[in-house]
Length: 432
Image 1: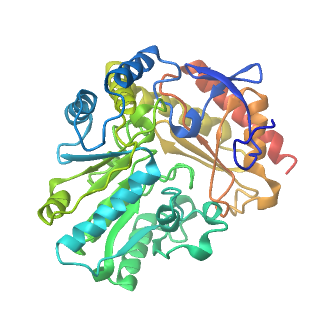
Image 2 (image 1 turned 180 degrees about the vertical axis):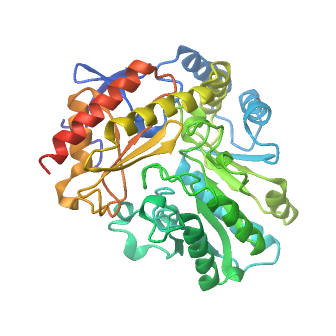
């Protein structure tokens, strides 16, 4: 393809002609979108209701500066408040994408401590394996080696805590091990210097749907409270039903101080991300006359209309519950098909965020060498069989296949995903 886009040719480049329901149409073939794009699509592709809502809002309102109210923005806020947000999250800010959203949350955390006279609290902790965005700040705070390539020398250094991965825990009690590790990071850096801890409730594509031990998040919340550290939940991928609950943090009896959620907010129909906070976080900023600066195209009328309609459809069709039930079916089927596979370490996840980790040696968890290119080869092998999966990992963490299909999938789609992924892993690992 002789096109100026993308800026650097991508090895998995394909030309998609259109998308409908759970399918992409490319190269004259119908391909099951088992990745939901980049773990985005929830209500399926091509829903006319959403298209009409976007068109109407764009025609009626056009562009309006983000801090002003419009009917479309008010309807979205009402829907979020009445149907989706936990009661304590009374304040909302909108950006275009997850990177902007996480950076806004980081800035708000710094402003919060500054407004309370704690200017020394400037450090933000993250997980060692993580992805929080593509701006310089979010790239720096994330633990994604591939995304840092060519930039690491210029990035601000942020402290990190070991990712709570039960599979690769060096101790006998993963819950205690990772909580103790987090506490040691706080002690090493000095709690008086730490403003916030930012992390995904369930580690998404960077780790491949890693679910922390059940004791982890309650203990992390306790440690944050004891040390005046804000907890920022990165729910860009896990929010709005993806894990089988409205938000990923709700799998545990824990509430963050700020959370950011974007992909499922519009289901891919428009760029929009929400930053949601409590009054306790926002009040000091307001009292000091601070502002949370907007981005030019944030809260765009068409994007807000798309989100409002997508969330309406999600509620009307009970798609969060469907994500939970279909996720159980898919994860259970994959586990059964791959439980004895010599090169599959684990099938994991919640709802329709599922990871399959491929290894060279199942007993030792030794990974294939990076030059073997296992992830890309599995994704390509599956594409040849008319299913698209998402390649996860960070480079250092690799060979994780992530499944994040639309919530509208049925049993036949589940069977197809299981069969194709099993065949693709077999094909690649037998020759790797």
